[in-house]
Image (cartoon, rainbow, N blue to C red; front, side, top):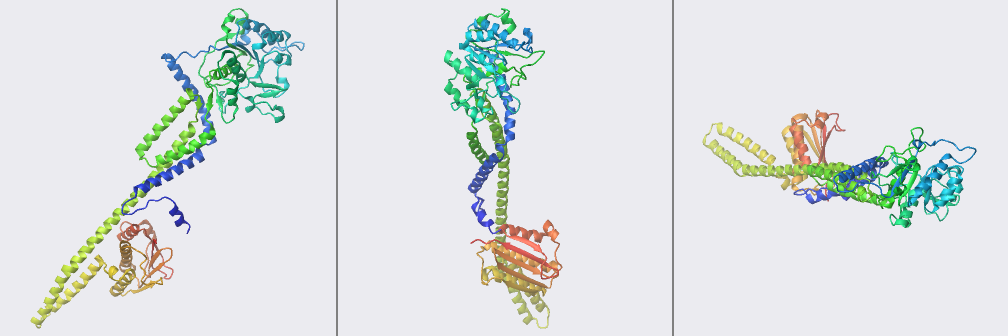
Length: 640
């Protein structure tokens, strides 16, 4: 416990002198507000729960951005969001081809024969690139190999599955007959959304070090081949051929794990054609001119060979649609980067401290208005950053910091404000006590200078009447009553203003109170000085000495009126502070009533109020040395 006073001196506090220190109060609020804001940020703002909630909020961001774009389009502010670079070709049961049919006699699957006839039809329109995003595992069809070799310079073969074993890969003849092989894997977030950019596959594939070639910056390896993700292959090819999209060096920046990349889902409409319509000649091949054509399976009414995925704008979407969105995102340089976590961590600490300091200094109305406005601005600014600056800034940690600093700042403000009001009230009570003592002193001086001499003059007149009226008892009785009145007047004067404090000192004044009590009540009194220096004044100012004197005086009055005691002692000593004990052997006091501070007990209330004015503490308990009685303990901290 002895460590607490030095510790308290190190911390900011309100120092009360003649008036409350408003600058000290402001510094205290700023200090504790900033400290609590930073602590709240460390403990709560980076919780994994908030990360999960942020992923759920991500879908809302996409939908909000899509609705805003749709409104701008309807108002003529922006153009309809239709792709001019990518076209989709779907292949399903409606094309009257059996997707589940197996190869016969160990040959290739029937779908390869269909593709062998489909590729020349599409290539007749001179597309920029042709992407086969289909399951072509198993033996290669010679006709398909021939068709691929004929158009090798612009055919990309997408590899589905997990690529955990060689059986997941198409035949070597097919892989060698195309320009590039790419991995069509897509990432799902914790909330089930597919919105992470399927790029740099080794970021999410668990592979041993020996399987990764030393020169592999990203992508995965299979049998010495570097297999990159589909968007990461197509976007640089488009950039090299038509000058649209990022270069290889720009894409390599996306491989950092601490910087997630998101697809720019914006409701883009991609021209979609059915395989049956193309093979029947219903589609002019020129619609594919200069475009990236992605061929993939779509939802089938009979079977679902390609399970659809959930995107922010579609409950279920085919894989080729997601790949088209990813490719479009890269080619338009609209990849949404996540705000770096390391920077966000330090930024949250800074914001938490600043908001905590702000919250602890603003009044309730202005604080609420400011924080609500700031919260709305945060939501709006992060949405603008997401939609137009392609930057995903987590808003829930920011809102969590905002809410926590608001709560802690409010508590700090209320606590410091309450203590300030208590200090101001204490100063007001002290001022009232000072004025009351000054008024008592004035009344005492008036009684001493005017009323007391008048009574003495009347007493002398009574003495003269005694000589002039021999044999009459009236003058003598008058003299006796006047002497009693003069004595009572001197007692009242002393009670109003104890001049003994000024003339004799603090300890003799307390001894004088005991002497008066013993003279008036025949109660045996004893004054015990526990200090070596009997003249010690303990560096008490006049106001503090007077309040302590009044507390002892009120306690002795209670002993005289209520205790029926035969012995009273006053013990004064100095240990960690000044301590005065008033001990009697009377009938005692109800300690429960003392704790409740009964409003009818004006004496106890008066003692407590005087103690609060000087920062003293008063306790009542049963004394150890008497079977009955009361011990009043007054503790007063001393300053050097």
